[in-house]
Image (tube, rainbow, N blue to C red):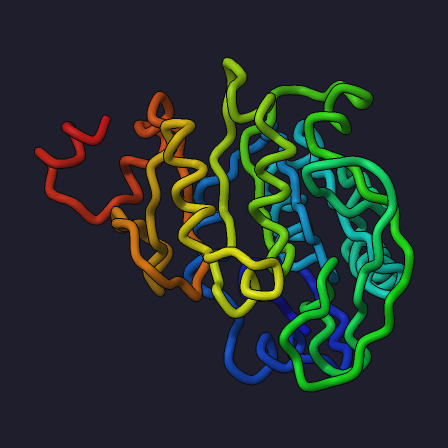
Length: 260
């Protein structure tokens, strides 16, 4: 299938491929990411699945940039490799790792039906059967210590409820002098098996002086106040970098000036 932001996608019989083909998948988020990313940027795709955002980032940052894609499921990693080969992507590093707040090994519950994007380190809230497999787990801070790279510009996190654990393992990055913009899924249906509410992700990044925005269907941003429940992907921007997204925010000129 031809992807809306460019590139090709091998359509497997799973929910994400069906959404891409029949309805479109996260059109607003893809539009924002496509316009925000620039040549030479460094992007982390945490929970890469079959590579929808990996491919988009690879295309946008070019050979001067770099994309690191984390995907612990061997099945998803295989399909991701196929998509990268199909698109001749040469600026992507694949890491068969799960990210969390500590290092070691853990069971990844792999969905055996169409919900291939619902694999999780906790039994996911899905109706189809799952199969546990053992995977290697590390923290983002530990990974970045062992694999020095250029300052990270953008991070996408979609790890089926483990988002808060990933952020807890990235406090060094979140406290650094060059902090990334983060696109993160907040969904209570995914965090419930982890025994926390998705608003805790919101609150966690607020303590690091991040500001939250929702994404419109057109790929623009709206300031997003804290809510009790979420089921969406939001954009979190460090306060010192708000000027980088000011052009995307649906506000008046005066309000944009205040935002910066």
